[in-house]
Length: 244
Ligand code: CA
Image (cartoon, rainbow, N blue to C red; front, side):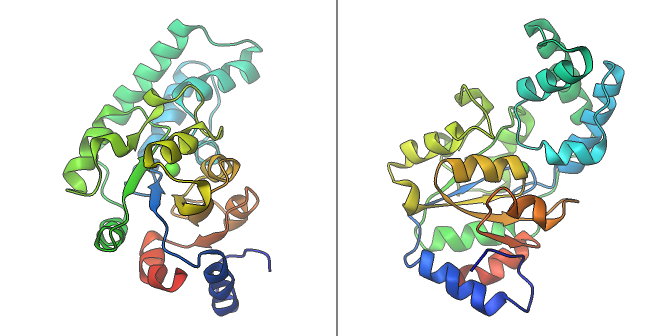
């Protein structure tokens, strides 16, 4: 059957299908960061919208969510190409991304996404290593991972935009996670909230659970190939044991 949003109508049949695909516990779980571990996307979206406007681009709030997961470089280049028909210079990329980070850091520290810590502790109790695979290069968030999720992530299990040449939606970030974990794609599971993140994970061949924590319609995640979509991380956490 086709994947679908987790409504009561299809929950039983869908979980049965998922169980057939996931007949064993994964050897590692790869978590996206913004919108999955931290409720940081509203601040990212408002920051991008304002800074883009200051530099002469139109990048509305909702569109930021559709482009979530792109590196700063890729985002700025996309805006430059469609507005001025050329690539951004390195200086422009540095200036605009720095301004966006300054703006983002004016917001209060993003809270943990509800259910994220509980899910990670559940996974840790099963002896499954967790990785962070993020397109972000925000030092403020990366340094907070260890504080907010103590004992869950080893430093080498955090893959950020600084570690890869090609950010999401390219598969490189998730392929690097597979390499660091020393496992094959079918042994891993990804948890993502963004269409481009789902595309990246699926291009790496990994079973992908989407959590729709933002303003998107679930179809935006299914269209990119998400194997299942939950309404929240809390819902995923409560269903986790039923997936295997
Ligand atoms: Ca995300």
